[in-house]
Image 1 (cartoon, rainbow, N blue to C red):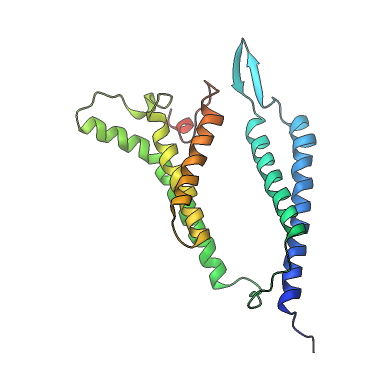
Image 2 (cartoon, rainbow, N blue to C red; image 1 turned 180 degrees about the vertical axis):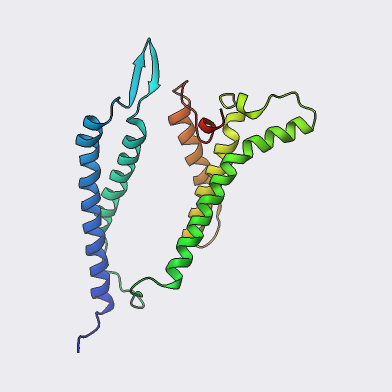
Length: 206
């Protein structure tokens, strides 16, 4: 008979798997940043044409690779320096109903947030028109402040706030502040410096 792993051994195994995953994705993201993206994507992160700075094809994959690299390094460091914490019970092995419920909840949260992101802007403009405001249809306002931020701000806030609250087990002011900060940071980083960049979902509203 094979003896069941003790809580401490199980904790060590979890740390080892986290360390392995952290190192693996650190290497893969570094390869993407240093080799794949520079050699396979036609344009760089930013393209200067006729004194106009535009977003290049490499912007999206570079941003994704940098994010994965940061998270992978954080996972690696956390695995290396975390203590051997004793867990109260052994984790369930395999795919469980709890796993499926969690995946379903995350999928619904993301899809619902994207739905809000896509339709909040047009609905807000329709409401303003119904109230007598002389504003054009939404597709003509996708690059006009503040209308272009309505869908992105509402959907982005809902997605970040909901996911943080779901992970923490309860909503909080910290989760709300983090969601607001994340949305503002993305607007400042991706929208403010570039005249030709449209935040989602405005690129599909034209």
